[in-house]
Image 1 (cartoon, rainbow, N blue to C red):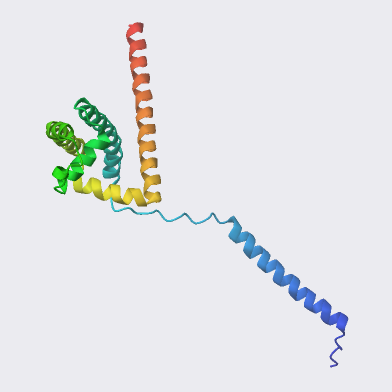
Image 2 (cartoon, rainbow, N blue to C red):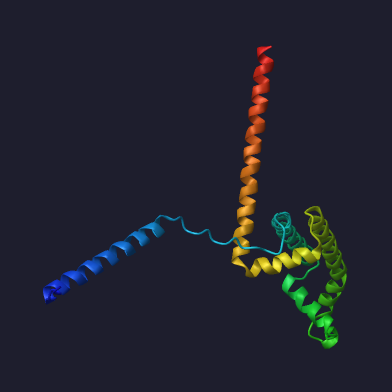
Length: 194
């Protein structure tokens, strides 16, 4: 049996057919992979329960408002006693380090400071008590609130997750409210029909 001689043209056809077959196999493999749905991104786990995160979200909103109100009350009280909030802070810092008698402050300002400082302390104590009550109402301890706050400040994934939880809860509440309204309307129509 005689083996046919392979010419350059025959070799090129042979090589082209192998390449063509390879391209078809690879093409079908890639197409099959492209039809597969993309793998889901792994769910990020957080060291806090959803309920605690929602409690944190609610408490944080209330505490922010409480802090603004308290700061306004402190400023008004300080101003009513003849000091600016900045001057009060300067005198308080001097008193803290024992430099109140250095002659840097007039006697009237020291007297005003001594009168208003206990009132400022009382306002701050009241605020602390209200903050504790808000956190307890939301099912949080001070320690848990602080842990979540520290993580929340530095973790954008946690921030997005908490916002999604709050949004989902708000949508669920809106759906529940619409359902309740439809029931009331149906009951009212039923009573009118009787």
